[in-house]
Structure formats: C-alpha cells, structure tokens
Length: 261
Image 1 (cartoon, helix red, strand yellow):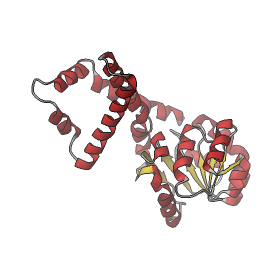
Image 2 (tube, one colour; image 1 turned 120 degrees about the vertical axis):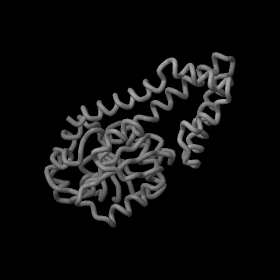
Image 3 (cartoon, rainbow, N blue to C red; image 1 turned 180 degrees about the horizontal axis):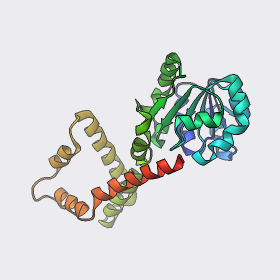
Image 4 (cartoon, one colour; image 1 turned 60 degrees about the vertical axis):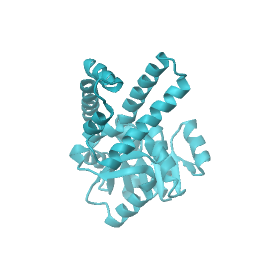
C-alpha cells in the first residue's frame, strides 16, 4: 500500500482524514476501537504494525515520543528489508534519534502538524534526511496538499515552530472559549457567542494573511480613540495577556526539548 500509519490518535487520525482526499490507499494500525471505526468510516484498511511495516511504501510514525523506541524495535528487521519512507510526527525526537531506533539508514521525513489538518486548514512543518528521493518528496508533498500549509524548515527550528503551530490550536480554543464566556456574561446565548467568536477569529486570521500587514497595524485600525475596543485591549494588557501568550509558547518549546531526551 502507498501509506500506512503506526499509531492513529488525534494527530494521526487528522492526517489520515486529510490524506484521504488524495488517496484511499492507506492502512492504519492502532489497537483502539476508535481507529477501527475511523478506518471503516474513511474506507481504508485496518491492520497491525507488522503488516503496515511490511506492505506500506510510506509509513507515518504517529506514536508518542516515549513509546517510539519500543514500537520500532520489533519492526527493525522488516524495515531494514523493505526500506520504506518513514514520516515521524513525534514531538522532540530528531531524525538522528529515529535513525538510531530503527537501527538502519532509511529515508525519513520529520513533520510537526496540527489538528486542523483534518479540515484542510493545518500547518505542517517538515524537514528530511539526505536519503529522501526528490521525486518521492515531491509526490508526498502533492499528496499532502489537502492538509493545509506545508512548509520546509530547518530541523533546529522545528521544536520552536511546533510550540506555536502544533500546540497553537489549544491556545486559540482557550482564548475563543474565554471570549465567548465574556459575551455570555453580557447576556448573549452561548451557542451564538461561540459561533461569533470562532467566525471572528477565522476572519481576523484571513485578513492578516491576505493583507500582509503587521498584526499591530490591524489591531490599531480597530481601536478608535476613546472607543470600546481600546478599553478591552487595555484590560488585556493590564492582565498580562501578551506576556502570558509568550510564556505559554516558551513553556511548550521547553517541553518539546525535554521529550527528545
């Protein structure tokens, strides 16, 4: 088969959903009932780790970093014989570490995706070792197009970028929920508050990306002198909003580095 997934939790399933827009030639291996249901829903194959290792040309390694070595050890012989392309999504684990766990030199792509990949609005950062064939890389990138933004990045920057885009959806959801709670406190029905907060966040992001303007300039354009928006901004600043946002990314980066040890 063209693609296989060893592990299919939240991130693996998001990638599998998006990849199905390009091909159904996919097998997933994960002991959970959720993975079996996903395979059935997507019309793809449910298998075990050994089958994926033996039969798939390109394999996503979608298990937790602390489980990776134990997962790969029993597959070393099969992988050495078949020499598939490995695509790791394990936070904190460098390509050299995956190579050591596999026990042989194989083409490896390291990616850091986020969950909006499932709806085609993801951010996927990638780097690779010298064994990845350029034609295979080009074909893989074409297959991954439905996932969203895919950007090549030096491996030394992957952990920092992942602390932003990989963990970022959780930060956005938290802020969105808080904004909606504020509107509910002011009398707006919760369903409406969440819908409006989400649409506002989406619209602001699209405006930033399409205009190319600095976020500070776009913020200033909304803040009329003495108006309600600047009053709200002042409260955010008084409560350390920017500092908290910066520190949360720094904390995620620190944890990414710890996971690779």
